[in-house]
Length: 252
Image 1 (cartoon, rainbow, N blue to C red):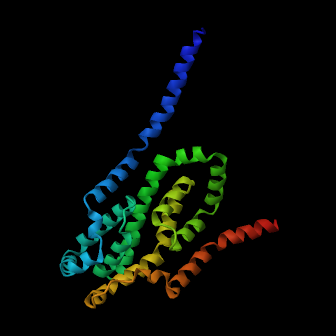
Image 2: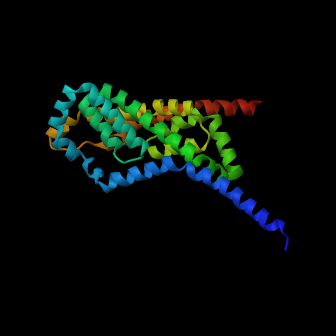
Image 3: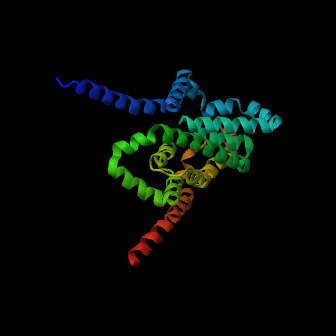
């Protein structure tokens, strides 16, 4: 029996362990998010994110907000960012609620800021914990996809953010796996979510009249032609730089 064989096997085991342990050590932020989601649903917090709850407590909420404006905005930003960072349900509900208690303009400002903050957090977690694993699994195909996306990252990101079809959590994660820079991601997210946020904040601004009439807000308004049309137009406009580059490269 070759005496070198056990030593070589041990070296291979150590090499594998060296590769695996750093990978596992990167998963702790993801573990925190999973634990947070489990706690959220375990405590039944999702049951309170309803318009019935908002209608029931609206007078108290509006009064407290008016008396504690700065604190209310601060708590709203923190809460919204946490919801987005942990990919919890209820962001649309909170956006509408923001329009109700703060008014359209202030609500748009704080919603866009808070959503971008939360999206950046989950982007960094995904990039830190899973990006290398994703690249290793995808191999050459992943590298080509990454190169193509990164070349026009801002345009693609604006398109994905503007079109209200792609889930918010999905658009938060994909750029992290495709090598998009933090700066480009933050800018694309901030700008891209403004139109949708404006629609839902406007709905929230008129929520009082809806509650007084005993109704519920129509969140499907964003898919109505008069609303969706301009948003789709902006999404198409965001792809113009890509088309321009393609035309120039074809002429070369």
